[in-house]
Image 1: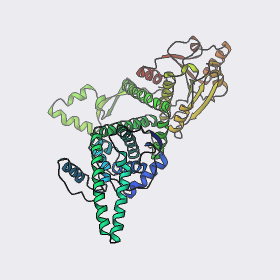
Image 2 (image 1 turned 90 degrees about the horizontal axis):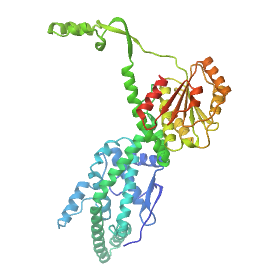
Image 3 (image 1 turned 90 degrees about the vertical axis):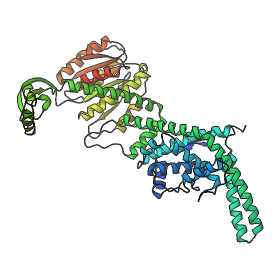
Image 4 (image 1 turned 180 degrees about the vertical axis):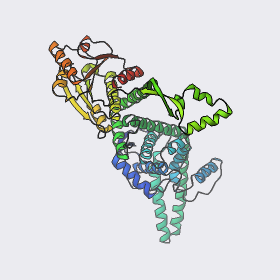
Length: 517
Protein backbone atom coordinates (compact mmCIF):
# COMPACT_ATOMS: atom_id res chain seq x y z
CA UNK A 1 0.00 0.00 0.00
CA UNK A 2 1.42 3.41 -0.94
CA UNK A 3 1.28 6.49 1.24
CA UNK A 4 -2.02 8.34 1.26
CA UNK A 5 -1.93 11.28 -1.16
CA UNK A 6 -4.05 14.30 -0.38
CA UNK A 7 -5.78 16.69 -2.72
CA UNK A 8 -5.64 20.42 -2.32
CA UNK A 9 -7.79 23.04 -4.03
CA UNK A 10 -6.31 25.85 -6.05
CA UNK A 11 -7.25 27.92 -9.05
CA UNK A 12 -6.75 25.92 -12.22
CA UNK A 13 -3.37 26.62 -13.78
CA UNK A 14 -2.99 27.90 -17.30
CA UNK A 15 0.16 25.94 -18.10
CA UNK A 16 1.60 25.07 -21.47
CA UNK A 17 1.91 21.32 -21.95
CA UNK A 18 1.91 18.68 -24.65
CA UNK A 19 -1.51 17.77 -26.08
CA UNK A 20 -2.94 14.53 -24.70
CA UNK A 21 -5.95 13.72 -26.88
CA UNK A 22 -6.96 16.80 -28.89
CA UNK A 23 -5.19 19.57 -30.75
CA UNK A 24 -7.24 22.36 -29.16
CA UNK A 25 -8.59 24.94 -31.61
CA UNK A 26 -7.37 28.53 -31.35
CA UNK A 27 -10.88 29.71 -30.47
CA UNK A 28 -11.34 27.12 -27.71
CA UNK A 29 -7.85 27.90 -26.40
CA UNK A 30 -8.75 31.60 -26.10
CA UNK A 31 -12.21 30.96 -24.61
CA UNK A 32 -10.85 28.47 -22.05
CA UNK A 33 -8.19 30.89 -20.80
CA UNK A 34 -10.76 33.70 -20.77
CA UNK A 35 -13.14 31.53 -18.71
CA UNK A 36 -10.42 30.49 -16.26
CA UNK A 37 -9.04 34.00 -15.77
CA UNK A 38 -12.46 35.56 -15.17
CA UNK A 39 -14.19 32.72 -13.30
CA UNK A 40 -11.09 31.51 -11.40
CA UNK A 41 -12.48 28.00 -10.90
CA UNK A 42 -10.89 25.80 -8.25
CA UNK A 43 -9.64 22.31 -9.07
CA UNK A 44 -8.62 19.54 -6.67
CA UNK A 45 -4.99 18.73 -7.43
CA UNK A 46 -3.00 15.79 -6.08
CA UNK A 47 -0.42 17.73 -4.12
CA UNK A 48 3.25 17.17 -4.98
CA UNK A 49 2.62 13.73 -6.46
CA UNK A 50 0.75 14.52 -9.64
CA UNK A 51 1.65 16.16 -12.91
CA UNK A 52 -0.55 19.24 -12.72
CA UNK A 53 0.16 20.08 -16.34
CA UNK A 54 -1.60 16.91 -17.47
CA UNK A 55 -4.68 17.59 -15.37
CA UNK A 56 -4.90 21.21 -16.55
CA UNK A 57 -4.35 20.24 -20.17
CA UNK A 58 -7.01 17.53 -19.95
CA UNK A 59 -9.48 20.16 -18.70
CA UNK A 60 -8.75 22.38 -21.68
CA UNK A 61 -9.32 19.49 -24.08
CA UNK A 62 -12.60 18.60 -22.40
CA UNK A 63 -13.64 22.24 -22.83
CA UNK A 64 -12.71 22.11 -26.53
CA UNK A 65 -14.90 19.04 -27.09
CA UNK A 66 -17.82 20.44 -25.08
CA UNK A 67 -17.74 23.82 -26.80
CA UNK A 68 -17.20 22.54 -30.35
CA UNK A 69 -19.05 19.23 -30.12
CA UNK A 70 -17.70 16.71 -32.58
CA UNK A 71 -15.92 19.43 -34.61
CA UNK A 72 -12.56 18.82 -32.89
CA UNK A 73 -9.13 17.69 -34.08
CA UNK A 74 -7.97 14.51 -32.30
CA UNK A 75 -4.26 13.74 -32.25
CA UNK A 76 -5.17 10.17 -32.99
CA UNK A 77 -8.46 8.56 -33.92
CA UNK A 78 -10.26 7.53 -30.72
CA UNK A 79 -11.93 4.70 -32.64
CA UNK A 80 -8.55 3.43 -33.87
CA UNK A 81 -7.14 3.58 -30.33
CA UNK A 82 -10.10 1.57 -29.02
CA UNK A 83 -9.57 -1.06 -31.75
CA UNK A 84 -5.87 -1.13 -30.89
CA UNK A 85 -6.63 -1.72 -27.20
CA UNK A 86 -9.16 -4.47 -28.02
CA UNK A 87 -6.68 -6.23 -30.29
CA UNK A 88 -4.12 -6.22 -27.47
CA UNK A 89 -6.67 -7.68 -25.07
CA UNK A 90 -7.27 -10.47 -27.58
CA UNK A 91 -3.58 -11.41 -27.51
CA UNK A 92 -2.71 -9.84 -30.85
CA UNK A 93 0.25 -7.57 -31.63
CA UNK A 94 -1.37 -4.72 -33.61
CA UNK A 95 0.35 -1.74 -35.17
CA UNK A 96 0.11 1.46 -33.18
CA UNK A 97 -2.37 3.97 -34.61
CA UNK A 98 -0.86 6.98 -36.34
CA UNK A 99 0.00 9.70 -33.84
CA UNK A 100 -0.39 7.41 -30.84
CA UNK A 101 2.00 7.61 -27.87
CA UNK A 102 1.99 4.81 -25.25
CA UNK A 103 2.37 7.29 -22.38
CA UNK A 104 -0.94 8.86 -23.44
CA UNK A 105 -2.78 5.54 -23.19
CA UNK A 106 -4.38 6.48 -19.88
CA UNK A 107 -5.65 9.87 -21.08
CA UNK A 108 -6.83 8.55 -24.43
CA UNK A 109 -8.72 5.73 -22.74
CA UNK A 110 -10.12 8.06 -20.09
CA UNK A 111 -11.33 10.49 -22.75
CA UNK A 112 -12.99 7.63 -24.65
CA UNK A 113 -14.68 6.42 -21.46
CA UNK A 114 -16.00 9.93 -20.76
CA UNK A 115 -17.47 10.06 -24.26
CA UNK A 116 -19.08 6.64 -23.66
CA UNK A 117 -20.75 7.74 -20.40
CA UNK A 118 -24.56 7.50 -20.74
CA UNK A 119 -25.14 11.18 -19.86
CA UNK A 120 -22.34 12.56 -22.05
CA UNK A 121 -24.57 13.37 -25.09
CA UNK A 122 -26.83 15.43 -22.79
CA UNK A 123 -23.82 17.27 -21.37
CA UNK A 124 -22.50 18.11 -24.83
CA UNK A 125 -25.92 19.21 -26.08
CA UNK A 126 -26.12 21.69 -23.20
CA UNK A 127 -22.63 23.06 -23.85
CA UNK A 128 -22.07 23.43 -27.60
CA UNK A 129 -21.37 27.09 -28.37
CA UNK A 130 -21.80 28.09 -24.71
CA UNK A 131 -18.57 29.21 -23.06
CA UNK A 132 -19.90 29.27 -19.51
CA UNK A 133 -21.61 25.85 -19.61
CA UNK A 134 -18.59 24.28 -21.32
CA UNK A 135 -16.17 25.69 -18.76
CA UNK A 136 -18.38 24.84 -15.80
CA UNK A 137 -18.88 21.23 -16.93
CA UNK A 138 -15.20 20.73 -17.80
CA UNK A 139 -14.14 21.91 -14.32
CA UNK A 140 -16.77 19.75 -12.60
CA UNK A 141 -15.67 16.66 -14.54
CA UNK A 142 -12.05 17.45 -13.75
CA UNK A 143 -12.81 17.67 -10.03
CA UNK A 144 -14.75 14.41 -9.99
CA UNK A 145 -12.00 12.61 -11.92
CA UNK A 146 -9.34 13.97 -9.57
CA UNK A 147 -11.06 12.27 -6.64
CA UNK A 148 -11.44 9.02 -8.57
CA UNK A 149 -7.76 9.04 -9.59
CA UNK A 150 -6.66 9.75 -6.04
CA UNK A 151 -8.55 6.69 -4.76
CA UNK A 152 -6.93 4.52 -7.44
CA UNK A 153 -3.47 5.77 -6.47
CA UNK A 154 -4.16 5.23 -2.76
CA UNK A 155 -5.20 1.62 -3.43
CA UNK A 156 -2.15 0.92 -5.65
CA UNK A 157 -4.47 0.39 -8.63
CA UNK A 158 -2.84 3.19 -10.57
CA UNK A 159 0.92 3.65 -10.87
CA UNK A 160 1.77 7.29 -10.55
CA UNK A 161 5.29 6.52 -11.87
CA UNK A 162 3.78 5.22 -15.13
CA UNK A 163 1.49 8.23 -15.33
CA UNK A 164 4.17 10.88 -14.85
CA UNK A 165 7.79 9.82 -14.45
CA UNK A 166 7.52 7.01 -17.02
CA UNK A 167 6.35 9.46 -19.65
CA UNK A 168 9.32 11.74 -18.92
CA UNK A 169 11.76 8.81 -19.18
CA UNK A 170 10.24 7.68 -22.45
CA UNK A 171 10.51 11.14 -23.94
CA UNK A 172 14.15 11.36 -22.84
CA UNK A 173 14.89 8.01 -24.54
CA UNK A 174 13.33 9.34 -27.76
CA UNK A 175 15.53 12.42 -27.66
CA UNK A 176 18.67 10.38 -26.90
CA UNK A 177 17.81 8.02 -29.77
CA UNK A 178 17.61 10.90 -32.24
CA UNK A 179 20.93 12.27 -31.02
CA UNK A 180 22.57 8.85 -31.41
CA UNK A 181 21.20 8.49 -34.94
CA UNK A 182 22.41 11.95 -35.83
CA UNK A 183 25.86 11.15 -34.45
CA UNK A 184 25.95 7.90 -36.46
CA UNK A 185 26.07 5.73 -33.31
CA UNK A 186 23.78 2.99 -34.62
CA UNK A 187 24.63 0.55 -31.83
CA UNK A 188 23.56 3.02 -29.14
CA UNK A 189 20.49 3.97 -31.18
CA UNK A 190 19.45 0.31 -31.46
CA UNK A 191 19.93 -0.19 -27.72
CA UNK A 192 17.85 2.93 -26.95
CA UNK A 193 15.20 1.81 -29.39
CA UNK A 194 14.85 -1.55 -27.65
CA UNK A 195 14.86 0.10 -24.23
CA UNK A 196 12.17 2.52 -25.36
CA UNK A 197 9.98 -0.30 -26.70
CA UNK A 198 10.18 -2.20 -23.45
CA UNK A 199 9.43 0.87 -21.34
CA UNK A 200 6.58 1.89 -23.65
CA UNK A 201 5.03 -1.57 -23.35
CA UNK A 202 5.30 -1.52 -19.56
CA UNK A 203 3.76 1.95 -19.34
CA UNK A 204 1.01 1.11 -21.80
CA UNK A 205 0.03 -2.15 -20.06
CA UNK A 206 0.03 -0.52 -16.63
CA UNK A 207 -2.01 2.50 -17.71
CA UNK A 208 -4.43 0.50 -19.83
CA UNK A 209 -5.15 -1.87 -16.93
CA UNK A 210 -5.74 1.08 -14.59
CA UNK A 211 -7.99 2.78 -17.07
CA UNK A 212 -10.17 -0.34 -17.44
CA UNK A 213 -10.60 -0.51 -13.68
CA UNK A 214 -11.63 3.15 -13.69
CA UNK A 215 -14.38 2.77 -16.33
CA UNK A 216 -17.39 2.42 -13.95
CA UNK A 217 -16.08 5.25 -11.75
CA UNK A 218 -15.51 7.45 -14.81
CA UNK A 219 -19.13 7.12 -15.95
CA UNK A 220 -20.32 7.89 -12.42
CA UNK A 221 -17.98 10.90 -12.24
CA UNK A 222 -19.44 12.36 -15.45
CA UNK A 223 -22.97 11.86 -14.10
CA UNK A 224 -22.10 13.56 -10.79
CA UNK A 225 -20.44 16.44 -12.65
CA UNK A 226 -23.55 16.86 -14.82
CA UNK A 227 -25.75 16.93 -11.72
CA UNK A 228 -23.58 19.62 -10.13
CA UNK A 229 -23.73 21.70 -13.30
CA UNK A 230 -27.51 21.24 -13.53
CA UNK A 231 -27.90 22.27 -9.89
CA UNK A 232 -25.77 25.36 -10.50
CA UNK A 233 -27.83 26.28 -13.57
CA UNK A 234 -31.11 25.85 -11.65
CA UNK A 235 -29.78 27.95 -8.79
CA UNK A 236 -28.74 30.72 -11.18
CA UNK A 237 -32.12 30.63 -12.89
CA UNK A 238 -33.82 30.92 -9.50
CA UNK A 239 -31.72 33.89 -8.49
CA UNK A 240 -31.68 35.56 -11.89
CA UNK A 241 -35.44 35.36 -12.42
CA UNK A 242 -37.62 33.05 -14.45
CA UNK A 243 -38.98 35.40 -17.07
CA UNK A 244 -37.66 38.30 -19.06
CA UNK A 245 -39.16 41.73 -18.56
CA UNK A 246 -39.83 44.14 -21.40
CA UNK A 247 -36.64 45.64 -22.71
CA UNK A 248 -34.55 43.30 -20.60
CA UNK A 249 -32.27 40.49 -21.62
CA UNK A 250 -31.11 37.34 -19.91
CA UNK A 251 -27.87 37.09 -18.00
CA UNK A 252 -24.74 37.70 -20.03
CA UNK A 253 -21.54 35.73 -19.46
CA UNK A 254 -20.11 38.18 -16.92
CA UNK A 255 -23.29 38.03 -14.84
CA UNK A 256 -23.23 34.23 -14.97
CA UNK A 257 -19.61 34.16 -13.85
CA UNK A 258 -20.26 36.49 -10.92
CA UNK A 259 -23.34 34.56 -9.83
CA UNK A 260 -21.60 31.20 -10.18
CA UNK A 261 -18.70 32.47 -8.08
CA UNK A 262 -21.10 33.64 -5.38
CA UNK A 263 -22.96 30.34 -5.40
CA UNK A 264 -19.80 28.26 -5.19
CA UNK A 265 -18.54 30.20 -2.16
CA UNK A 266 -21.75 30.82 -0.21
CA UNK A 267 -23.76 27.90 1.19
CA UNK A 268 -26.53 30.23 2.42
CA UNK A 269 -26.96 31.59 -1.10
CA UNK A 270 -27.33 28.02 -2.37
CA UNK A 271 -29.97 27.45 0.32
CA UNK A 272 -31.76 30.61 -0.77
CA UNK A 273 -31.66 29.50 -4.43
CA UNK A 274 -33.30 26.17 -3.58
CA UNK A 275 -35.93 27.85 -1.38
CA UNK A 276 -36.53 30.54 -3.96
CA UNK A 277 -37.05 28.00 -6.74
CA UNK A 278 -39.74 26.15 -4.79
CA UNK A 279 -41.45 29.35 -3.65
CA UNK A 280 -41.40 30.89 -7.11
CA UNK A 281 -43.01 27.77 -8.62
CA UNK A 282 -45.81 27.92 -6.04
CA UNK A 283 -46.15 31.68 -6.60
CA UNK A 284 -46.55 31.30 -10.37
CA UNK A 285 -48.99 28.38 -9.99
CA UNK A 286 -51.21 30.41 -7.66
CA UNK A 287 -50.88 33.46 -9.87
CA UNK A 288 -52.13 31.51 -12.90
CA UNK A 289 -55.01 30.08 -10.89
CA UNK A 290 -56.01 33.53 -9.60
CA UNK A 291 -55.74 35.03 -13.09
CA UNK A 292 -58.01 32.42 -14.66
CA UNK A 293 -60.55 32.82 -11.84
CA UNK A 294 -60.52 36.62 -11.87
CA UNK A 295 -60.33 37.66 -15.51
CA UNK A 296 -63.92 38.88 -15.67
CA UNK A 297 -66.82 39.74 -13.44
CA UNK A 298 -70.30 40.71 -14.62
CA UNK A 299 -71.66 40.70 -18.17
CA UNK A 300 -72.48 44.31 -19.06
CA UNK A 301 -73.65 43.87 -22.66
CA UNK A 302 -72.80 42.37 -26.05
CA UNK A 303 -70.28 43.16 -28.74
CA UNK A 304 -69.03 41.79 -32.06
CA UNK A 305 -65.67 40.02 -31.97
CA UNK A 306 -63.89 36.74 -32.81
CA UNK A 307 -63.60 35.62 -29.14
CA UNK A 308 -65.13 32.15 -29.41
CA UNK A 309 -64.88 31.45 -25.67
CA UNK A 310 -67.08 34.50 -25.00
CA UNK A 311 -69.63 33.84 -27.78
CA UNK A 312 -73.30 33.47 -26.85
CA UNK A 313 -74.64 29.88 -27.07
CA UNK A 314 -76.83 30.76 -30.04
CA UNK A 315 -73.76 31.73 -32.05
CA UNK A 316 -71.98 28.46 -31.19
CA UNK A 317 -75.09 26.53 -32.21
CA UNK A 318 -74.76 27.88 -35.76
CA UNK A 319 -71.76 25.60 -36.26
CA UNK A 320 -73.88 22.56 -35.42
CA UNK A 321 -74.72 21.82 -39.07
CA UNK A 322 -72.62 21.49 -42.20
CA UNK A 323 -74.32 24.53 -43.72
CA UNK A 324 -73.90 26.54 -40.50
CA UNK A 325 -70.16 25.86 -40.24
CA UNK A 326 -69.45 28.00 -43.31
CA UNK A 327 -71.50 30.88 -41.86
CA UNK A 328 -69.80 30.51 -38.46
CA UNK A 329 -66.33 30.60 -40.07
CA UNK A 330 -67.30 33.67 -42.08
CA UNK A 331 -68.52 35.51 -38.97
CA UNK A 332 -65.37 34.44 -37.12
CA UNK A 333 -63.07 35.70 -39.90
CA UNK A 334 -64.95 39.02 -40.03
CA UNK A 335 -65.04 39.31 -36.20
CA UNK A 336 -68.85 39.56 -36.25
CA UNK A 337 -69.65 36.84 -33.72
CA UNK A 338 -72.04 38.13 -31.06
CA UNK A 339 -70.03 37.82 -27.83
CA UNK A 340 -70.46 38.72 -24.17
CA UNK A 341 -69.03 42.04 -23.03
CA UNK A 342 -67.58 41.78 -19.54
CA UNK A 343 -66.57 44.39 -17.05
CA UNK A 344 -62.90 43.66 -16.47
CA UNK A 345 -61.75 43.41 -12.89
CA UNK A 346 -59.07 46.05 -13.00
CA UNK A 347 -58.28 47.29 -9.53
CA UNK A 348 -56.22 50.39 -8.88
CA UNK A 349 -54.36 50.68 -12.19
CA UNK A 350 -52.09 53.34 -10.73
CA UNK A 351 -50.67 51.47 -7.75
CA UNK A 352 -48.25 53.14 -5.38
CA UNK A 353 -44.86 51.83 -4.24
CA UNK A 354 -44.33 48.88 -1.93
CA UNK A 355 -42.51 49.35 1.36
CA UNK A 356 -41.33 46.22 3.17
CA UNK A 357 -40.14 45.98 6.75
CA UNK A 358 -38.43 42.66 7.43
CA UNK A 359 -37.59 41.39 10.90
CA UNK A 360 -33.92 40.34 11.20
CA UNK A 361 -33.92 39.75 14.96
CA UNK A 362 -32.19 36.70 16.42
CA UNK A 363 -35.40 34.66 16.58
CA UNK A 364 -35.62 34.75 12.76
CA UNK A 365 -32.43 32.69 12.34
CA UNK A 366 -32.69 29.46 10.39
CA UNK A 367 -35.67 28.52 8.18
CA UNK A 368 -37.52 31.80 8.88
CA UNK A 369 -34.52 33.78 7.66
CA UNK A 370 -34.24 31.80 4.41
CA UNK A 371 -38.00 32.03 3.83
CA UNK A 372 -38.12 35.78 4.50
CA UNK A 373 -35.29 36.35 2.04
CA UNK A 374 -36.99 34.21 -0.59
CA UNK A 375 -40.41 35.88 -0.20
CA UNK A 376 -38.79 39.32 -0.26
CA UNK A 377 -37.06 38.34 -3.49
CA UNK A 378 -40.25 37.06 -5.15
CA UNK A 379 -42.42 39.97 -3.99
CA UNK A 380 -39.81 42.48 -5.19
CA UNK A 381 -39.60 40.82 -8.62
CA UNK A 382 -43.39 40.89 -8.94
CA UNK A 383 -43.65 44.57 -8.02
CA UNK A 384 -40.85 45.64 -10.36
CA UNK A 385 -42.58 43.79 -13.21
CA UNK A 386 -45.74 45.75 -12.34
CA UNK A 387 -43.77 49.01 -12.55
CA UNK A 388 -43.90 49.58 -8.79
CA UNK A 389 -40.99 50.99 -6.81
CA UNK A 390 -39.87 48.79 -3.90
CA UNK A 391 -38.28 49.86 -0.64
CA UNK A 392 -36.92 47.15 1.70
CA UNK A 393 -36.05 47.99 5.30
CA UNK A 394 -34.41 45.57 7.73
CA UNK A 395 -35.07 45.94 11.43
CA UNK A 396 -34.39 44.43 14.85
CA UNK A 397 -34.35 46.95 17.69
CA UNK A 398 -34.00 49.65 15.03
CA UNK A 399 -34.04 49.90 11.24
CA UNK A 400 -30.56 48.69 10.32
CA UNK A 401 -30.38 48.93 6.54
CA UNK A 402 -32.51 49.88 3.54
CA UNK A 403 -32.53 49.63 -0.23
CA UNK A 404 -34.75 51.26 -2.87
CA UNK A 405 -35.28 49.44 -6.19
CA UNK A 406 -36.95 51.20 -9.11
CA UNK A 407 -38.40 49.56 -12.24
CA UNK A 408 -36.00 49.58 -15.16
CA UNK A 409 -32.90 50.46 -13.18
CA UNK A 410 -32.93 47.59 -10.67
CA UNK A 411 -31.10 44.35 -11.32
CA UNK A 412 -31.07 41.02 -9.56
CA UNK A 413 -27.41 41.31 -8.61
CA UNK A 414 -28.05 44.31 -6.36
CA UNK A 415 -31.07 42.54 -4.86
CA UNK A 416 -29.06 39.35 -4.26
CA UNK A 417 -26.25 41.30 -2.62
CA UNK A 418 -28.68 43.13 -0.34
CA UNK A 419 -30.66 40.00 0.56
CA UNK A 420 -27.50 38.08 1.42
CA UNK A 421 -26.06 40.97 3.40
CA UNK A 422 -28.55 40.76 6.22
CA UNK A 423 -27.87 38.64 9.27
CA UNK A 424 -30.20 37.83 12.14
CA UNK A 425 -29.37 39.24 15.57
CA UNK A 426 -30.78 41.31 18.44
CA UNK A 427 -34.33 41.84 19.65
CA UNK A 428 -37.50 43.19 18.04
CA UNK A 429 -38.93 46.71 18.14
CA UNK A 430 -42.12 47.65 16.28
CA UNK A 431 -41.75 51.21 17.59
CA UNK A 432 -38.59 51.64 15.51
CA UNK A 433 -40.52 50.45 12.43
CA UNK A 434 -43.43 52.82 12.99
CA UNK A 435 -41.12 55.73 13.73
CA UNK A 436 -39.16 55.03 10.54
CA UNK A 437 -42.38 54.90 8.50
CA UNK A 438 -43.57 58.19 9.97
CA UNK A 439 -40.34 60.17 9.75
CA UNK A 440 -37.74 58.60 7.43
CA UNK A 441 -39.22 56.24 4.88
CA UNK A 442 -40.45 58.84 2.36
CA UNK A 443 -43.66 56.87 1.79
CA UNK A 444 -45.74 58.03 -1.20
CA UNK A 445 -49.51 58.18 -1.44
CA UNK A 446 -51.24 54.85 -2.15
CA UNK A 447 -48.23 52.90 -0.91
CA UNK A 448 -48.66 49.40 0.46
CA UNK A 449 -46.63 48.52 3.55
CA UNK A 450 -45.69 44.92 4.30
CA UNK A 451 -44.28 43.95 7.68
CA UNK A 452 -42.78 40.44 8.04
CA UNK A 453 -41.99 39.27 11.55
CA UNK A 454 -42.15 36.33 13.94
CA UNK A 455 -42.06 38.39 17.09
CA UNK A 456 -44.10 40.46 19.45
CA UNK A 457 -43.19 43.85 20.92
CA UNK A 458 -45.07 46.53 22.79
CA UNK A 459 -46.17 49.72 21.02
CA UNK A 460 -47.35 52.79 22.99
CA UNK A 461 -50.87 53.97 22.23
CA UNK A 462 -49.56 57.32 21.04
CA UNK A 463 -47.55 55.68 18.28
CA UNK A 464 -50.52 53.60 17.18
CA UNK A 465 -52.71 56.72 16.99
CA UNK A 466 -50.10 58.65 14.98
CA UNK A 467 -49.68 55.76 12.53
CA UNK A 468 -53.41 55.29 12.01
CA UNK A 469 -53.82 59.02 11.31
CA UNK A 470 -50.89 58.89 8.88
CA UNK A 471 -52.37 55.92 7.02
CA UNK A 472 -55.72 57.64 6.68
CA UNK A 473 -54.19 60.88 5.42
CA UNK A 474 -51.90 59.19 2.89
CA UNK A 475 -54.26 56.43 1.73
CA UNK A 476 -51.80 53.79 2.89
CA UNK A 477 -52.55 50.14 3.66
CA UNK A 478 -50.45 48.36 6.31
CA UNK A 479 -50.26 44.57 5.99
CA UNK A 480 -48.48 42.45 8.60
CA UNK A 481 -47.38 38.85 8.13
CA UNK A 482 -46.60 36.98 11.33
CA UNK A 483 -44.72 33.69 11.15
CA UNK A 484 -46.26 30.90 13.16
CA UNK A 485 -48.48 32.70 15.68
CA UNK A 486 -50.95 35.54 16.08
CA UNK A 487 -49.98 38.87 17.61
CA UNK A 488 -52.49 41.23 19.22
CA UNK A 489 -50.01 44.08 19.00
CA UNK A 490 -49.80 43.76 15.21
CA UNK A 491 -53.61 43.92 15.00
CA UNK A 492 -53.58 47.25 16.83
CA UNK A 493 -51.78 49.12 14.03
CA UNK A 494 -52.17 46.86 10.96
CA UNK A 495 -55.07 46.91 8.50
CA UNK A 496 -54.60 43.20 7.85
CA UNK A 497 -52.68 40.59 9.86
CA UNK A 498 -51.94 37.24 8.23
CA UNK A 499 -50.53 34.18 10.01
CA UNK A 500 -47.89 32.58 7.81
CA UNK A 501 -46.89 28.92 7.59
CA UNK A 502 -43.46 29.07 5.95
CA UNK A 503 -43.72 25.40 4.93
CA UNK A 504 -46.86 26.01 2.87
CA UNK A 505 -45.69 27.85 -0.26
CA UNK A 506 -49.06 27.87 -2.11
CA UNK A 507 -50.83 29.38 0.91
CA UNK A 508 -48.07 31.97 1.42
CA UNK A 509 -48.25 32.90 -2.25
CA UNK A 510 -52.02 33.39 -2.01
CA UNK A 511 -51.69 35.63 1.04
CA UNK A 512 -49.09 37.91 -0.52
CA UNK A 513 -50.76 38.01 -3.94
CA UNK A 514 -54.03 39.07 -2.31
CA UNK A 515 -52.24 42.02 -0.75
CA UNK A 516 -50.43 42.97 -3.96
CA UNK A 517 -53.44 42.64 -6.29
